[in-house]
Structures are given as structure tokens and as C-alpha cells.
Amino acid sequence: MPKKKPVKHSGDDDIAAPVSSQTGSSIDNFWWWLTHKGTTTSFLCISLFALLIRSAVSMYPYSGAGTPPKFGDFEAQRHWMEITTNLPVIDWYRNGTNNDLTYWGLDYPPLTAYQSYIHGVLLKIFNPESVALLSSRGHESYLGKLLMRWTVLSSDALIYFPAALFFVLVYHRNRTRSSKSEVAWHIAMILLNPCLILIDHGHFQYNCISLGLTLGAIAAVLCGSEVLTCVLFSLALSHKQMSAYFAPAFFSHLLGKCLRRRNPVLAVVKLGIAVIATFVIVWWPYLHSLDDFLMVLSRLAPFERGIYEDYVANFWCTTSILVKWKKLFTTQSLKSISLAATILASLPSMVQQILSPSNEGFLYGLLNGSMAFYLFSFQVHEKSILMPFLSATLLALKLPDHFSHLTYYALFSMFPLLCRDKLLIPYLTLSFLFAIIYHSPGNHPVQKTKASFFSFKNFPGYVFLLRTHFFISIVLHVLYLTIQPPQKYPFLLEALIMILCFSYFVLFAFYTNYTQWTLSRYFRSSGKEKKHI
Image (cartoon, rainbow, N blue to C red):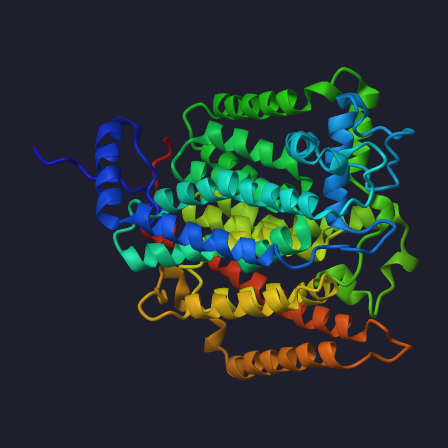
């Protein structure tokens, strides 16, 4: 008797959810797909190439290299290793003689601190002077820098890469139209993410850990493991608070699915227990005292820095050219205004997922929710574009008309930051590499999905506008590298870059929000789904 194919739920488009009653059949199909599609070989080859690219970028300077007294993000990460390996856990976030919080005090959740401790132990074994308490400030020996770079590289290989493989296997498992070259192309887009490589292996950070945990949680959603989703995303939030950019999508999708169960309350309680248990385990050292807990929380929300820093391509910074937000409103008022704006911008995608939860809609929800946070939330950095860009990368096969443009402007929005870090050559090289892979013959995905009938290309003048946009960006690249701005307007070029990128991000956000809502229309036209799952 022939085996039944896995059931494809309405609204999931090409991403089918597994069915528990057909576990054996699903595993058989999975292994057949894996061995016949060659995903393992493709993934290993691309992974080795991606590690080589990361290693090459890590040979260039990092944030704050040789610039005392506070240096930059590299020194911040090294200093956290110094603190965590020399002080008791309870003192990691507390100001004191041996932990001056004004000098790169820990301002990320406890999982980042534990990660710093593990990496610090490694440095202490091979190069103890690089994490010696107090005396190691500004340490920049060759061995110390080499070990620091290896900690990021190993974090990528151990967390981000396996999560990427998990996602690719789940996403493409039941996509009948997925060719071998298309799967390989998608793997390359995820592993050769130019923004992530430049920030983690150039500028120097560990975004690969929180993004890897988030990517694992996304894959868990697609394969129907909701408890695992809650655990992994809670870990991501406990590593970097910026993972909250994805919270609206996870919350609305899981809530929408729970409301369709026979016992919605029980389903919500089960997921709530998974979330609470995970947070309790990670935060346990700081839960014995309310003061200790509030002490850590206060470090995670540095509102005193203002609603934005530097020149970031979001709403508050762009409009500050005309509206002086910091002068017109108090910090407390701006906190409330930005929160309301972020919720309103996230609301359409959240409502869509609560009403019609689906795997494809969830991926669009991740993109729209994270973009809403980037555009409107409080204290956004240039590096925050990593969150919406990761979501767009997962949807690269669904956004053939826009993904390459988003990549270009996401990179361009970080151009001044990367130039300050002396990463111009990696910036240009990775941009060129991305263009080659994206447009490689036989691998370029031009899918006509159900929702792709709407495109800005249908509007008169859009192509001209896009080309004009691109031409201006090229001019700004050249001007930024060749001329000095007027003394009266020292950040003129940064402001122009910010305005250009912001305008594209807004257009992109309108398109993806509209596309997500069109999914609901197709769900209704294809017939009503069953009330109970």
C-alpha cells in the first residue's frame, strides 16, 4: 500500500506542517528528500566557504581598534569576559571598585554574560593577561585578538550554522518546486548574509548567537514544535534584548494557533510554562532579590542615551531634521510616543496572524514586526537592521523583486559605521560577492507566488524612481569617500544616506505588510479551515 503524503494545511502555501499521526512516513520522506536532493553536501560546501569569508573579514580592523580611552565594541566584549571570569555572578551588573559600569558595563541579559564567561575562560587558559582584572583594559595583543576572533567564528559555526540547516531542511522539505540549485541558493543567502558578517566578524559582536537561537525558533514553528519554539526564542531574548523585534510575530502566530485549538486556555498555559521555566533557569542568580532583578533590568534599557544615537535610517532620526524631538519632548514622553508608534506599526501583521495563522504569514510577520521596531522603537542602532534583514533573507525566494534592493540599502545604511571601522574593502567585496551569488545563472529564483501579483513595478515611474535612488546612492558613496563636508554641517552626508535608506525601508514595509494581508484573502478563497486543529 503506497505511503500517504504529509497533509498540507490550508494557508501554509509551500511550507507544510508535520502531522503527528504520520511521523514514520514523514521521517521516511524526509530522509529520501535529504539523500536525493544533496542538501547536506551543498550545506557543507557553502558552510566552508562562508567560514573562509568570515575568517578573511576578521583580518581587518574592528570597532575602536587602537583608539583609547574606551576603544569600541571589541573592548566591550573583552571587558565583559574580564568581569565575568574574575567577579561573582551577582556582581556582574553591579557598580563597584572592580566593575565600573561607566566603562563598558554589561548591558545585555544574563545569557550574554554566561557566553562572555565561557569565552573568557578560553582566553584565561591561553592568554590570561588579556582578561586580567583591571590591568587588561585596552588589551590588544596579537594572541588576544586572535582568540577573540575565534570565539565569534566558533559561535557562528556552533549556533548560527546548525540553526540555518534546521530552517532550510524544514522550509524546503515539502516544497515540490524546490530544485537542488534553488535550495543551495537559499543556503548561500542565509550563511553569506553580508550585514551579519560585517558586524560580527568586522565590527565585532556576537549577533550570530541571538539570531541563531531565533532562527532555530522559527524553524521549530515551521515544523510544529511550539514548546521548542518558546524555549529557543526565550533564550534569544535572554541573550540580546533586541530579539524583542521578533516578539510580535511569535506572540501573534502562537496565539492565533492556540485560539484554534479545542482547549485554547490549556494551549496558552503550556507555552507560558515553557517561557517562564526558560527565563527562570537563565535568570536564576538574579531572582533571589527584587533589587538584584531590577538592577539587571535597568542595565538593559539605557533610556538616558536618548531616542536615537548617531545617524540611523529610522523615523525618529530622519524626521529630527525637521522636528527636534529631543528638545520638544522629555525622555519619558518619547518613550511613550515611540512605544505607541511601534505597536501601531506592528499591529496590522499581528492581527493578520491572530486571524489567519500560517507559516508563510508568520515569516512575513517576522519581517514586518522587526521592521516596525527598527523604524519606530526607542534607541535603535545602525546594526539593528540585522533583525529585519534576517527575516527578509528567509523570504528571499518569495521576494525576488525586492530582496536584492533591501540588501543593498541595508548595507548602505551601515556604510558610515563601517567606514569608521576601516572596513571599506570588506564592505565592497561582500557587496560584490552578494551580487554575483544573487544573480548567478541557474540559481536566481524568479517565482510567481500567489501574492506576487502586486509589485511596485506596476506603478508608473517606479523603475525610474528606483534607478534614480540607486544613482544618488552611488554619488553619496563617492562623496563620502572623497570630500570633507561643510564645517557648519559636519554630518551632512550621513544625514543624506539616512534619508535615502529610510525612504526605501518605508516603501519596502508598505509592500510586505500589504503582501502579508493578501495571504488572508487567499485563505478565504481556498475554503474555510477547520475550527479545531
